Image (cartoon, rainbow, N blue to C red; front, side, top):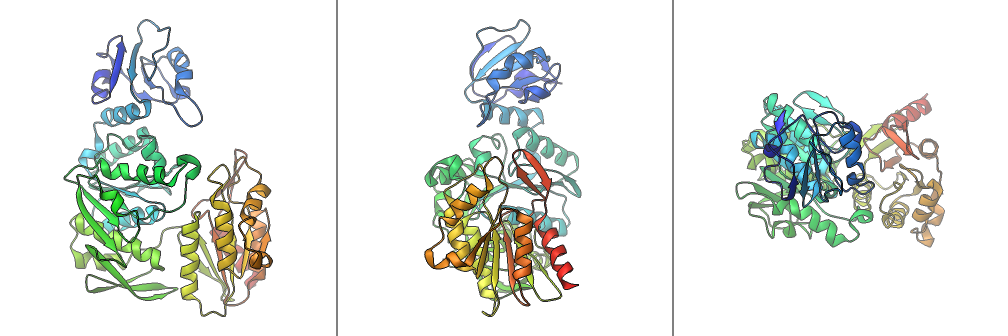
Length: 487
């Protein structure tokens, strides 16, 4: 039990009906989960408005209602608190309820269009190898030292974040690395968190269904840096034209990294091949299993962040050479017939282009590149023709298929991808709605030494159609198909 006035500390309150000097059992924003004695926070979401469920929360035993608009009828014995922003209030209350757990560890946020999962996950790996107790909040999973918890959002809701940070405190975790999405920032899920530092990877076309304009998308990312304290560090990729924008208003200590421009941390690619690449960082050579120039940026960001967090540079480089690739990020399998299948989460135009460019630098020119790609339903439609153009232009064969159609028609999504294909490339594309059949067709078309890229879903082990999820693992499926063809 917590006293309501204590968990409301720092929340912008505009009106109160009842007493805040009362105990509440828990904080909740889903009316279906309210239990006796809870504080219910009515938040306005993209789909539902929690204000519609205040009466239901009271009927289930809510002791307090936190909302942006007080109801016309209020129930005796229930405290009503009007706040400026329900989502912000929820995040601050969650932090207060769990005793501000982010203060008790070094929390580093990673934001950007691409690379968030790789950078945060590999920082987790690196600091584990260095002997620390480490936490991870990522798209793929939540880790509290060696214990794994499932996750469903890039940036979980504020209650989930703070609950797991508290568990990290209890487990003695010293460092936590966290993916921070633009949705999470915009929906105030990170309010009340104390960050030791933030990392910006890059910015490209994504989520414009939600943010409407690229400038809004960029400025939302920037808020993570705007809210850092002067004790924190702000690390940004200045080879990206938006890199310096992130530093404009931050009070934090500013650091940069780059492959092309002068920066505090620089790297050079010396060799790049399928089993890894050789980098030069700070006049030292590093062999890494991660390939491609986009991974060179990721590795450099990891090195810089580790240095800023106090790891000894040479020991850091030694441990980085042992890092393993993240599931669904340029994850590859080579069959007995020397067909290489690559599974990657590339679901934006820039990410798809990066992966295909990397494949282009690794091939001799005699191999065919067969790309299987789709676009998610109920998401940014404007990137579909762009991705269709990139896949058809940079591949010998491009197979357009379903990703997670969600509530949209798979054929309609594919048609929007086809609309971006230039006339000279139309003979290079096939459209196969069924994703497993599309992957099977790619395997049947491939000959020895050819390369199959399966893009879009990466680590995901499901496919979602009209609210139904079925088991679907790109890597597992392509590996089994190639093994069957080997026989």
